[in-house]
Image 1 (spheres, rainbow, N blue to C red):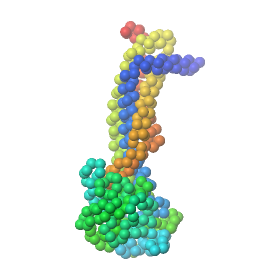
Image 2: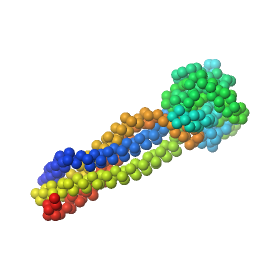
Image 3: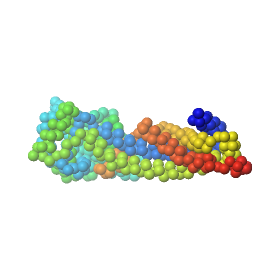
Image 4: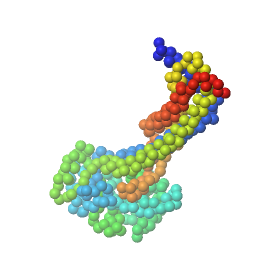
Length: 398
């Protein structure tokens, strides 16, 4: 019976609190806005990491593999000789096409300075030297211009790079190193890593950087996903070569770990610091709410209402304000940032990569949950004060 009575009292006190919100719009609005700001910033920052992680993880397919020098963590630190490359291309697991041969591209990766369209400052743009098979190894679509021709100073540009840097329209001329290059096409890689890159012929690029016949990595299209284990075993046990074999998706997912983990840590710190500020706002708001209803609470206590319902009613009000603020902040983050394209530095290869903010349902739930936690903590001490308020003293207050 006492449980039912407690529920009835809790409902009555909570309804009374909510009906008086209209008279406290200013202080309540401050709490809602503060909580919305916390959630919007937290979700937006974490969506950067989610966008980078998704973009990297979606690069490549289950049939594409990357081969590097054994012990290398990234292309920048790998060197493969002509003998290494030939041994890899001879593997029977690699798919073949008429007129091209093995669908494998031995590539070089360097960075060049280009002017950013947004700021006018220079940035490290990734320039990749590829072989003709590269366009069969990756899933690309030419959206403007044409394919580059081997042996010529021609460049193709990823869709994201074309919008990120100045002077990358089809027909434009670039001065990279000691050579002059012509932009002949723009390709779309579906929002994956190649979208941030410039591609040219590896045979033309190698002499400019004194690479001779060496390359840094070899990308290969396998005949099927099921042959990857045998492809890997064949190369890692071959005494002629010392190579590291990975699925392309696995490689890029690993590349994103350091960057995304750093962003998550930064986002967590920002969320906690802003949360502390919002927590103080919530505490002040709820103390003000309790103070404005001191006589009402004392009257209810004098009529036989227990302290538990009073505590719960204050907490419910605080969490409702936080829920509204969290929902507003989540909506701002989703509609304002989801899909927004930006760029950042990939510290693994010291080049700039483009990505899109990705506000996922999990991040929205996390943001609202964080708001509710702050609301619970913010209402706890004012609720305890309301419960412990001496009835006689409270009834004498104006």
